[in-house]
Length: 175
Image (cartoon, rainbow, N blue to C red; front, side, top):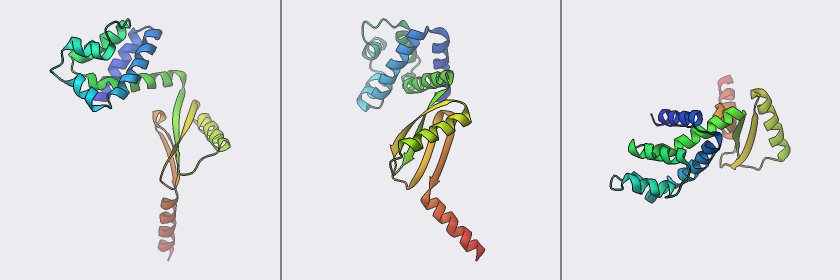
């Protein structure tokens, strides 16, 4: 339910807001998303004891000129849906990625992957999906290699442990 609701709010923001205000709103929602990871902030803004005006002032400030953002926050407070803010940001980010046909991917590996391999991987996957993909390397404890592009639903992995166990099973079946 929350992803579908966040998607609806994001769609309305993109459809009805001017590009500059939507970008400002998206940047602000990114900052708010990180604040929602803090228990004290989350407890305060979700508390029924704090009034609508106090919540609005706490989240967007007193003199915020971005009416799109202020109205969005007021609506989310009224409908008791402030917890959708991280999801709305993700949906806005995804809409931008689709519009630009540029996505972000991750390479998980226990060893450092050199620049030439990363460039080749980027070129091959970008060619296959006819899009621009930027990869970030993430250290992993698992022996092997995993490539993930969440927005395109791509996940490819090669794990040494899994290969060893499959090879052993294949040999045992042959005996």
